[in-house]
Structures are given as C-alpha cells and as structure tokens.
Amino acid sequence: MPRTPSRRNVLRGLTVAGTAAVVGFDTVSRSWATDGTTSVALTGIPALDGTLLTDAASLSAAADDFGHIVHRGPRAVLRPGSVRDVVSMVRFCNTHCLPVAPRGQGHAPFGQAQAEGGLVIETTPLASIGPVGPDSTTVTVGAGARWSEVARATLAHGLTPPVFTDYLELSVGGTLSVGGLGGQAHRHGAQVDNVTELRVVTGAGELVRCSPTRRADLFHAVLAGLGQCAVIVEATLRLVPAPETVRHYHLPYTDLETFLDDQRLLIEEARFDYVDGQVSADADGAFRVYTLEAVAYGAPVGPAPDDAALLRGLRHDAARLRYEDKPYFDFLNRLAPWAAALKAAGVWNFAHPWLNLMVPGTRAASLAAPLLEDLTPETLGPGGVVLFYPLLRDRLTTPLLRASDEPTSYLFDILRAVPPGDSAAVDGALAGNRAAYESVAAAGGTQYPVGSIPFTPADWRAHFGPAWPALKAAKRTYDPRGILVPGQHVF
Ligand SMILES: Cc1cc2nc3c(=O)[nH]c(=O)nc-3n(C[C@H](O)[C@H](O)[C@H](O)COP(=O)(O)OP(=O)(O)OC[C@H]3O[C@@H](n4cnc5c(N)ncnc54)[C@H](O)[C@@H]3O)c2cc1C
Image (cartoon, rainbow, N blue to C red; front, side, top):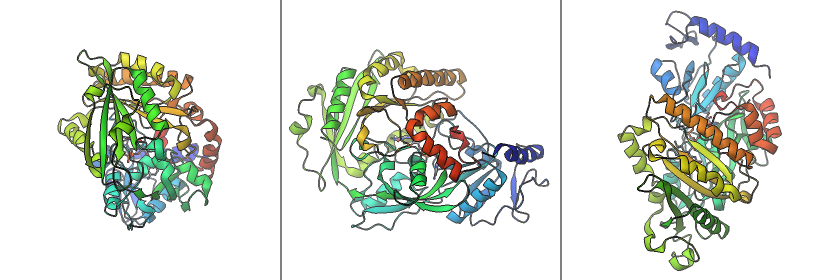
C-alpha cells in the first residue's frame, strides 16, 4: 500500500508547525492552523455543513476513551453536519494520506477509535432513526444512533431489534464494527448478523450502499471489520415483534463446570430468550459464586413463563433461585443504574484494561479456572464484573466475527477497573490479558475485539483465520492508502 511516504511528508509539515499548538480551523483559507498565524501544509479543506474542531478540549477528548490507557491526539475532529461532510473529509484525508477514525461513543478501551495526527469523525450527529411503523420488518438508522434510542423508537410500534448489547449507550456503528453480542445472540446471532443493508463511506471516499447481494465483499468486510474498509454512516436493522414483559431468573451455582454445562444445555434447547451468567467473589474474596441469568419473553411473543418447564433438569441451588417480572425495556436498560452509579463514584474514569475472550466450549472451564483463581476483588476493581455468554457457532454467520470452531463457544469477560495513575497495575493487567489470550488461542479460541489485549498485525491474521484473505483484499480495494482506523493495528 502506498501510504507511508506521502503520509510522512504531510505529517512532517504538521509537526514542524507544532504538534500541541493546533488551535484553529481557518474557514477562509480552509486550512488547519497552528498558533493562529501559521498555516500548515493542509490547505483546500472542503466546505462543510458541520464543524471541524481543532481546539484543545476537542482534541484531547478524541485522544481518550473508556479505557483511559491509550492517548493519541488527532489533528482535528469532524462533527459532521451531513453524510456529505464525511465523504468530503475522508476524500481529503485520503488525498493527503492522513489517518481517519470514526468515533461513536468512544467506549472502546484501548485506543481503537483514535487517529494520531489525523482526523477523528464523531458519528453522534448521524443519529437519524426510521421511519418505523407497526408493520416494519427493518429500520434504517444513522451510525451514531445509540441502541437505547433505537429501542425506544421501535418499541413505540411494538417492535425490537432481536439482539442488544448489555449496555445500551453504545453507537450502532461502534458495535457493528466489532460484532455486538448479548444474551440473545445464542438464538439470533450477533447484531452484525441482523443487518440487511449498510451505507458506508470507503477509505477512498466513495459513498456506497452494500448488502449481502450488492457489493457483498464490502458488506462482509465492514460488519465486524473494525472500521478497516469503510465508515458506516447508516445501517438497516432487522426488527421482530417485542415482548411487553419478561421473566428474569437468577440461578445460583456452586461449581463452574455445572454452571457452564447448564448454560450450554439451555442454549442447545433454546428454552430461554436470553442467557448469560456472572461470577462473583464469596466472603473470602474467591471467585466461586456463579449466577446463571436466563430470561423468558412474555406476551405477545412468548407464552406465559412456565417455571417448571423452563427450569427442568437444571442443577442450580433451587432454594436460592429468584426471579422478577419486568417490562421489556427495563430489562434491556438494566445497566443504566449501574453505569450511573459508577459515574457518580468517579469509577467510570478509572482505567479499564478489559479482557474479552472467545473460549471453545469444551475447554471453557479449564481455561477460565486459573484466571478466576488469580482474581481478587482488588484486582477486579470497583464495579468490575466477570461474565460468561454461551454462543452457538451456527448462529454466528458474519465471516469477520470470530469464535472457536466448536459448536459452542463462550464469550468470557473479565472487566476490570484500575485507579487512574496506577500504571503498574495497568501494565500488569495488560500483560495478564496477553498471556490469557495466548492460552485461549492455543486451545482454538480467540479474543472478542472490544478489550485491551496488545495485538500485532500477525495476531490479527491468526485471529481472522480463513476470513483474512477477503479482509485483506477488501482493504486493498476500499482503503488503498490504508488511512482507516489505525488504532486497531490490523494492517
Ligand atoms: C460499559 C460497556 C458495556 C459493553 N457491553 C457490551 C456488550 O454487552 N456486548 C458487546 O458486544 N459489546 C459491549 N461493549 C463493547 C462495545 O460494544 C464496543 O467497545 C463498541 O465498539 C463501542 O461502541 P462505541 O460507539 O463506543 O464505539 P467507539 O469506541 O467509538 O469505536 C469502536 C471502534 O469502532 C470504530 N467505529 C466506530 N463507529 C464506526 C462507524 N460508524 N463505522 C466504522 N467504524 C466505526 C472505531 O473507529 C473503533 O475502532 C461494552 C462496552 C462498554 C464500555
């Protein structure tokens, strides 16, 4: 790819002008400026419907994310007023070989949405939803729409996307770039498996509609494609009838293997609409309290929950079983109070060296056990959680969303929070993440790429496996200068 020499030249010009002093965008000369007097090499910036921000606060916000571990400053941040702005600025950056990263809610934890010396494109203004009506089978939404907004808009008509992430304040474009997994994925696949069409801006600045039958190579390279080939500006999502209420069961277990086996049984038999589980610490601080969470949808899409039939043959501690009935949206939005409490306590600003692994089903207990043994409430940190989502291979149809080849995989997450400034703890967690990934990869698993695992292009080649040649070919075709999303370190 011919990106290196010309990008270096442009960046050299910028560096001479002063890295930290980029303060303004001159609408008359249409150039990025440094100290207000010195124009840099980048003249000819197109007229925009939105705003190009170069003030210190905008640049430093775009050099941070939910992880608070990696900080790479862009030269400018685009707050687009239209899709046309995205096209214009991607073309501009392509011409100058400047890196570009779209940013939804910035909840990636390891610099994935950062673009050192380049352009970050905020997608939040691209948040249109609909139209949607009671007979809709799909809804078209802007990439910057949050899943909470999509849910509210579609539920107003009794409809819902079939799969949600547990936390709803993530952008549609952000989760479609990684996969989008939740407890419903064992039935419906990931969010990427429920997209019928995309509108994207390629790295070459071409605005394209793609689907499984139209520019399919691009469609399949964008979904779970880590932003490498195109910026998603719009997605058409499948809709299904929504339940009004759900019954949410919490089943306690005392043994990891039994807990995982019962999760697998439940998804193989498709007894519930949602299945996941948590591991928490007991009074001695040992991570051996297992809670399987299972949710049955009620009317109008499901029968009234029949406890005996749903729980038949499970090996949980029946005496400590509990469940509650709640409105469907309240269930979807159940993490909102958790997030609000962490924000209020300042923990949202902690570092988040998250570990997210795709573990082969037959090896899940033996691979997870040593990691759980090493964990303490202190190393997990305040608000930290340990999660298991059982997944069926045949429901995950998007080529770039990788799991193990076994019929069942588990998404196994250790989601840590480390006090800001404790760089030794962050470094230790990152090294631990890497070691954990290596043992899982050696057993035929991989990572789910929403965490903080140091990864090289060679690791990505191994990660994508049989899907790698198609991704590489699409990269060459659609982002020939290699400007898109350098923070993922794929190419
Ligand atoms: C509290 C919390 C809970 C979470 N829960 C879940 C969960 O239940 N299930 C799950 O699957 N994940 C979960 N995640 C992970 C989350 O789905 C990913 O990190 C997701 O990418 C974040 O979305 P975002 O809008 O913040 O994206 P960003 O962090 O802004 O971007 C993530 C990546 O996608 C790229 N990108 C963003 N927008 C676009 C676009 N429009 N086109 C192309 N590329 C784009 C970025 O450049 C970057 O590389 C959770 C994360 C957090 C912090």
